[in-house]
Image (tube, helix red, strand yellow):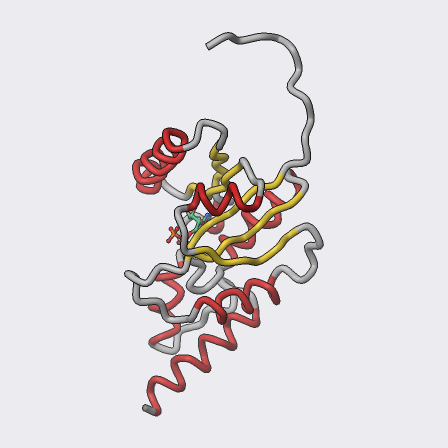
Length: 174
Ligand code: ADP
């Protein structure tokens, strides 16, 4: 590979932030805000993965994301079920954003990034480290707390807090 000092031509940057977002947390939102600042357009893409057993449907997860990112004009909410790189080609996007919390995230993320690079050389993965106050936070932890009526107001946006109350309220009355 030849390395030159020629500056790369600046092109309109479209990044995709893929994930389950079941549901979106303040940790995800921190990454979304920071990435929206760096890239021209950020597509938050909800993975429609039938093998997981999600609490919220894809439509519900997208709706919660839409509410929570309403103040960010260059953020678009979408979903995909295809291979990520195929979806990215459709969107003419070349950049993947992922968040890194602890070392435990690293091994899986490295494997995913290397695989995507192998499948499509033109795609780069950008890792953004979690802000320290969110480094422990995950959608699973939030669901676990909410399921037992614990307080999640500091962990998720108000619209998600409300949706969690409704979801677990419904489950109990079934
Ligand atoms: P996945 O099922 O793909 O891991 P998640 O919704 O759990 O989807 O996470 C999507 C992305 O957001 C991943 O890159 C994950 O590491 C990152 N992420 C999740 N929680 C946080 C957090 N608290 N701080 C920073 N990044 C996070």
